[in-house]
Length: 75
Image (tube, rainbow, N blue to C red; front, side, top):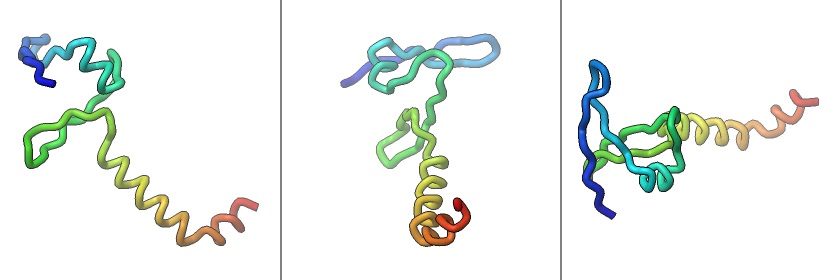
């Protein structure tokens, strides 16, 4: 899929207008946030926060390692 995007002026800033089809593929709508991630192939737009994903990965690791202690705290 290749889409030509136009850079437009929005107030004192600039932005890119995303088509309805792209918004549907990203599963985002007006008001949602997307993240621009630099990859070896260029810039990737994603609705997923990579920092939050890493934090969740670490949290899951802690929960696995300290399962018994967390269970006791929950009682």
